[in-house]
Image (tube, rainbow, N blue to C red):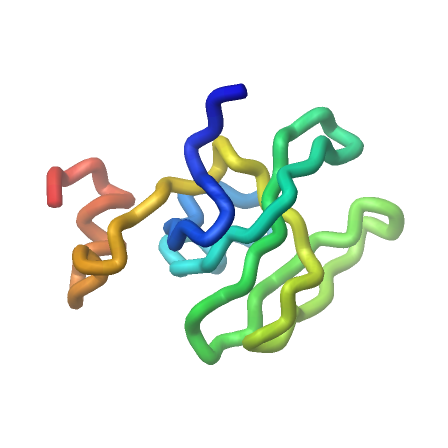
Length: 103
């Protein structure tokens, strides 16, 4: 199975569901094993690497909650993330990558 991310990768959130758009551009660590969620997306457990709370949609209720830094309780689809080399994480890199500008 081909995936964009692998366990241990750092990735930039490239897409998220409506209501969670503030997560786009955030750097997260992906961990495995990969799983298939209820919408048939291949997902990874993610851990945000910045201090801001991470917005999480709750499909069963239609509501939202916040994941605190260091928590690893949410899955995020593989094809909604862009893996990144840790050496490339300098100021402005995430914004450039999200706009399609080569780093």
